[in-house]
Image (tube, rainbow, N blue to C red):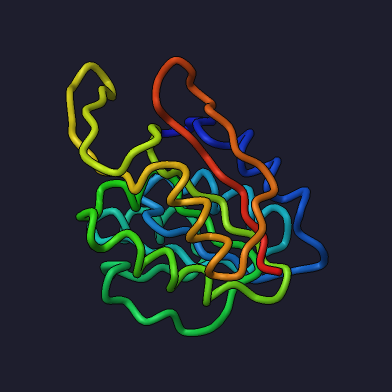
Length: 179
């Protein structure tokens, strides 16, 4: 994924909802850091989180101006609030029972008017989904779009944008803002 622009259009759209804010968190940042790069260019103080210490080491070499942490979002304690949190293609790899508590944690970690950009997998119903990436099949899980939207509302966020960005694939991204 080096030099990939995957998801960048969604990030650019999400940033249109951000005021004069400066702290950003990229959950599941991986080693390439395309979101970190854009956020740094926009003047954000960036934190990247990934469960892979190898990916974090590579990202830290690539972007020495950002802070990187190895951790599991299910157990990691967020150190402060953030104005922007990106969670691109990460939470749907979590066990289904972990997705709601993680979503609550992320919403609670948003500053007032903070923006959350996340993917949630497609489909109307919760459950397992099969997908393909790079010619390989993989499985993930989703709460389903209706439940995801209800949870975001319950956790104090308004939906600003929802898009099936790879139609007919079941890939959905949401932009939510803390109200």
